[in-house]
Length: 73
Image 1 (cartoon, rainbow, N blue to C red):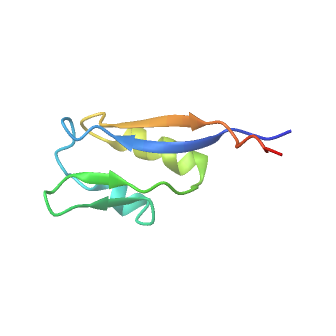
Image 2 (image 1 turned 90 degrees about the vertical axis):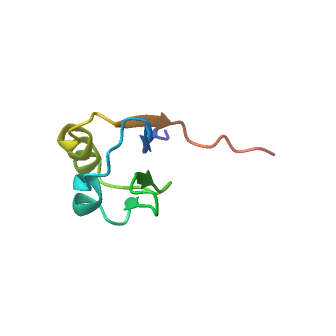
């Protein structure tokens, strides 16, 4: 049985680039050249992702469940 994965998505209209997410999970979140956070499509610890969501002062981060790939063939 496969488990859904979590991915972070950043609402660029809400992000003010405070950088708390990038400080907490620098492999996942980076601040781009415009000063907004961008989430990389990588696996990360669920508890840390949830903390990043909770720590964002603008509530600009959402966690999205990604179902496992279905094998073809």
